[in-house]
Image 1 (tube, one colour):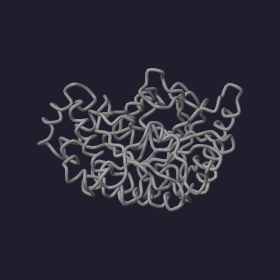
Image 2: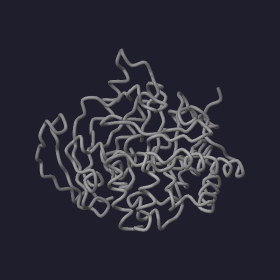
Image 3: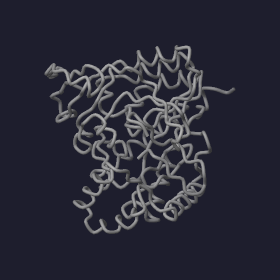
Image 4: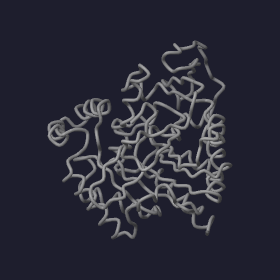
Length: 353
């Protein structure tokens, strides 16, 4: 990548906005054109998940806010409103970077109050989005977790995680490390419009394959399963077959859910690209953010049956948080959390995508 075309306006945003001084930067390179980065020094980096949450973990680390993956359904869009930033294009192009995340995490892991609980990453926005190629926060974060033998998991759509494969193997030698990749469908045309900033589904499956080849088991979160666009029996079969061929340790389906903030943005996209489906979505999601129980159960049953046919299964409870690489060992907040696992064979709808 070329970084010699960096431009900096040097202005400081209001302290009330982020709670700290902000340096705003733009990079005149094709991969970052139109994206603005707000560099902040966070006051804390270990975020506690509210007790009422459905999440199977209590602590998260989110080095970024906003996401250039630009997934039109992303539940985390709402979190940008807490910063008085736009939840549509602004969420895709105004990226907050916690530049001191690795150093702050190391300090907090060494604090007297920290008890070594599991830390989940990629639960709000992707920690391996394009910005990570420039800011390189994850190597320091993984190294800190490794040095304290602190269990952690990562959920991503980004191929950049392979850069940190040596660190992941080192961490997996001393603690429980879980890696999951999100692949909800394999249709290239749907991908180009609904997840325009992400690596293609096949490239994500290549990540699963590469991790497996290096002794790191990788689960796949089949999310989101998008009603009427990626949920036919043939489409589900194609996706599960590709996931199995990549060597995934498990596959867990999650039907699309549409929280406020994401719902408006997704429905606007739907009206432009698939206007004939708008009314069907209004009916399907009339009861709230989640698809009806009957729909969730149908998708879960179909995917589990296909997974069994292709020799993989759903993640067991806690599996996404404790995947042990075979060749290595033998023995809703502003920074909020998403989803990591679907332990029940019945309908299970968590809050990642």
